[in-house]
Image 1: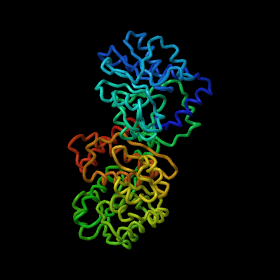
Image 2: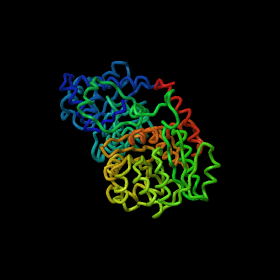
Image 3: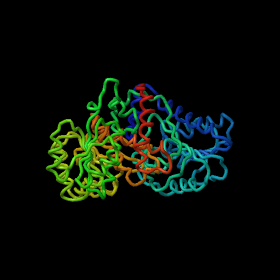
Image 4: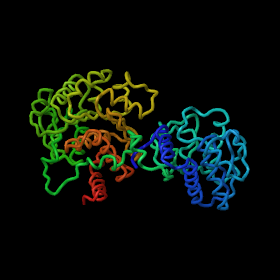
Length: 495
């Protein structure tokens, strides 16, 4: 269930199901029944207004209206457009509705305890205007609870963007699989509680569609996750290196190093200028320290082939020295996580970074929006949606891109992408990104592939924040990881 289908892929899933023997009206009947069931479970609802659009989303609404009326609800149905222009399955569903069909342009929200939004589904590709926009705006301003069919009308199913206006739903019922717009902001917040209904589309259609977008959940990456074994030892769990800046910015590297350890790396060494070494040595007893002032020192350190992954950027400093350190790390052929200052040091020079990244074993970059713009602004349109921007950046870089935010997107050069939906608002705190970089490095050190390590790191980061709760600071995140791991391993049957 991690697969996400964009509107074109969902339309293909419908077509394949019908080609393989399921009638379209059967799919619509099951979709409408799922909506009716959700409405019927709402407390204190007797009067329902169903707003239907001119397509199949409206057809779902006609089915729901008929079934709710049979259950004794007082149902008013309002159609946007001319009933005579309905076609296909939607026209057949409308024929079976025996009640009145009102004009949606004149609907009065005051006459309802609840509104069903069956105007437009995930396939909306242009901004709402005219009567459609006015109807959705009136619904949004009504204050009445809204049940959305597929997606709140006005939300783009591919991007989560609002196409002019959209009403906040208390619940959204979608079908077969979620869409990217259910997870990307602001669509995610407008959906309310999301339910996915089985309407009879066989899972085998996914073998034909081969979707490349997923929800970032354990099922996506757990098969590649480094679950400890009874016969394991610390050297088998990898040796991570954190490259630190000077003593005034060493805190960021310490956060990343702690996260590497908590993520499961068997050993962690911090390479830092001599003035900062005592701070690192005194911070966590499990850390090892080595002097790294410049690129030649790092190259010398990396002559030890047991060092398997490197994170650099947190508190490292911006400039030529950092660029040289990145070049030394990539030239050593190790897995690499680049964050913060390591990215800003290549601002405006994506080609320069892509050239050195090509020699790394696997590279993950973890920019926030500002760093992303400075690094990828010449190749990625600022007007593009987040999923497209992350994918384009990953292809241009030749590495995995983690475009951070409340709806973090992880994208690989081959087009795979995962959208996270588990980040709580209190993750917006100083140093949280340093911890994320460290978690990903710790997973890379244990041999996890770059895309899976990045996706797992993002999920673990969000779960650790959720486990700790309000009042979170970055130092709390590594300490919350053991509980997250325990639950993950229990559910995987590893404990």
